[in-house]
Figure 1 (spheres, helix red, strand yellow):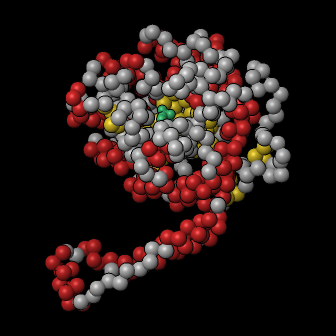
Figure 2: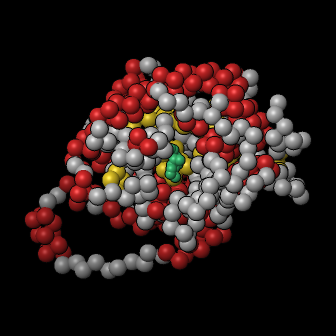
Figure 3: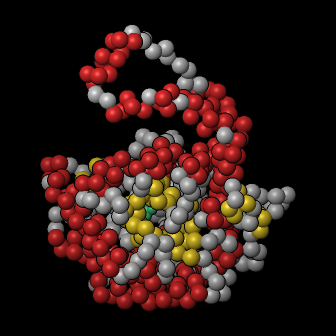
Length: 430
Ligand code: XLS
Ligand code: NI
Ligand code: NI
C-alpha cells in the first residue's frame, strides 16, 4: 500500500450523495437496453495522463509532484501500485497504457524490452489479484527524439526498425496481459513540409508497418482488435491518419480494412472539423468502428487539451451512435484525459474520473431512452421511405432514368428536414 490517496473510501453509487466522490448516475449494475451499464460503457483509465504526465504546458514544466516520478524500476512499481489503488477506488473495469508510461526509458532497445517485460509481469500479478482488465496497450512512438521525423514513416530505415521492434514488444506485453485491443496512434506519422518529404514513400512505409503489426499479432494468437486512432494534426502538420475517412482510404489501399478498426477520440474529431458523432457514424457505416477516447477539447483554444468529458448532450449524441452501431465489442470508453495543471491534489484525480463517468452514464441513459422512444429513428426512416418503392432506381442507368423523368414530367417538391423539431426531441432527453 502507498499512502497517496490517504483514507479516501471506494467510490460508490449513491444518487442522493452530497459529497464529491460518489457516482450519482453511474450504477454499474443498472440495466440499460437489456445490458448492465458497466458492460455498455466499459470505462478505462489512461495510465499516461493520470500517472505519467507531469502537468506541463508550452510555457512551463512540471506542476505535479508525485512520489513515483523518476526513472527507476522501483518508482515504476510504485506508480503501478498507486494506479491499482486508484482503480480499486474507482472500480472501473479497464485501463490502458503505452510502454513508456509503465517503464522508465533506457538507452538501449534490449534494456527497454527487459524493463517492459519485468513491469508487465508486475502488472499481471496485480490484475490477477482482482484489478481491472487491459482495454488496450500501445507503443509510444512519438516522444523520444529519435521519432522526430516519424516512426514508420521515418526517412531513416533504422528508426523504422526500432519502431517496428518496439511494437513487437508492446504487442507481446498487451497479449500477455490479455489486452482486448492494440492501438496505433501515429503521432509523428505525417510531415511538416513537402520540401523534405517523399509523401508517397512514407505512406507505403506506414502501410507495410501496419501490415507487419497485424501479421505479428495474429501469429502470436492475439485475438483482440487492432485499432488506428485518427488525428488530423498535432504533432505533425499533415497527418496520414487525419480522420476516419482518411484512415479508411489508407486501410483499403493496403488491404487492411477487414483487419484494422478505429479508436475515435472526441477531441481529434473536433480538430478535424467534424463532430464526434460524425466520426462514429462514419466508422460504423464503413464497418471499422472499434473504441473511443472520450476526452474533449476546449472549444476556444484549438488544440488537443484532453479534458475530461463534462458535457451531457455531447456524450448523449456520441453514445446514440455507439448504441446504433450495436455497442462496443472489444472496445470501450477510454479517458485519454488530463487534469488541468493546477489540479494538484490526489482527490482531483479521482473527482475528475468520477465526474466523467457520471457524465457518460447520463449520456448513455439519454441515448438509450432516445432510441427506445424511437421518435428520431421514426423520423429518419420516414425521410427515406420513398426509396422503399424505388430501389430499382439504383440498378438503372442515366439514360433510362432520363427517359422516365421525361415521361413522368415530375418536378420533385422539397420536404422539410425538420432539424429544429429533431433537436427539440433530443433536448427533451439530455
Ligand atoms: C494523442 C493521442 C494518444 C493516444 C495513444 O493525442 O490521443 O493519447 O490515445 O497514443
Ligand atoms: Ni489525443
Ligand atoms: Ni487518444
